[in-house]
Length: 147
Image 1 (cartoon, rainbow, N blue to C red):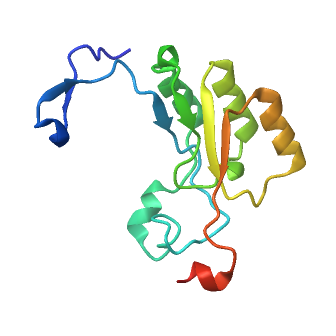
Image 2: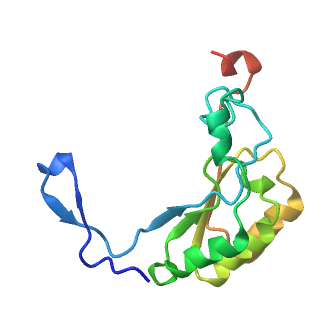
């Protein structure tokens, strides 16, 4: 476990005075898998398919590595978002990931396009107590989306 007791951060809105860093963060954004079933032109990862540098962030996180990372934050009980630049419903082992988070007492907040949400998955979310599911809606028509 890291010792955060001497950590400080500087914020310009406070005249660059050092401020104490909280013991642990209250939110973690973890990309278990950066897969997506859409190619939104405004997306920094999937909207730039011809940008080879972006391919460095695409992939699937090793579940054991994720668990080791979470071991350092378990006492903090942070809220976790299991996907940042991908569609969380496409995480290959989503049920295992979410069950592991809830077993640790961690709150889960997900942002999804909802296109692959099934009644079975929705029931699973309710059964394990997913704390927040937000649906992203960029437009209601193709014409609006390209504006």
